[in-house]
Length: 192
Image (cartoon, rainbow, N blue to C red):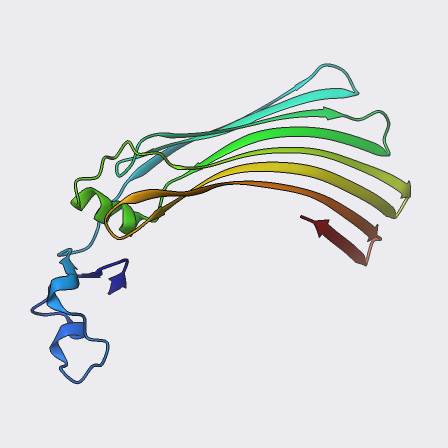
C-alpha cells in the first residue's frame, strides 16, 4: 500500500489492508485508488560523456543524460566542464550543469489519472561551480569551491502539480586532505 494523497492498493475487496476491520490505519474506500497488478513505467536513458584536450593544460568535458519516460516528457540534463591544469600540483575547474527531475512515479500516475498532462514542467536545478585544488606536499591537498544553484522546486498536492518556489543557493566549501598509502583523512566545511 502506497500513500500519496490517496492510498494505492491492488484491489479494495481483497487487500490485506482493507479486510482486517481492527486496523486503525485502514484506508477509507473514498481515498483508495486501485491499481490491479501494479503500476508499469518504462524509461529509456541515453548517457554520453566526451572529453577534448586543447593542450596538456586545458581540457573540456561534456556529458549529458537524456531520459525518455513514458510517464512524463523528455528530460535533458547537460554538464559542461572547463579544466585547467597549470602543473601537476594544481587543478582549476569551472562547471555548469542542469538537472531535470520528474516527481515520484506514484505521484506522476495520480497526476495523469486526474487529467494532468505528461508534458508538465519538471523540477529544474541549474548549477555553477568554480573549484581549485592544489597539492602542498606529496600527501597533503587543499581544495576550495564556490557554487551557485538556481532551483525551481515542483511538488504534487495529491491532484495537481504545483511550483513550490524558486530558490537560490550560494555557497563556499573548503577541504583539507591527507593521503598516504595506508591512511586517508579528509576535513571539509561548507558555508551556505
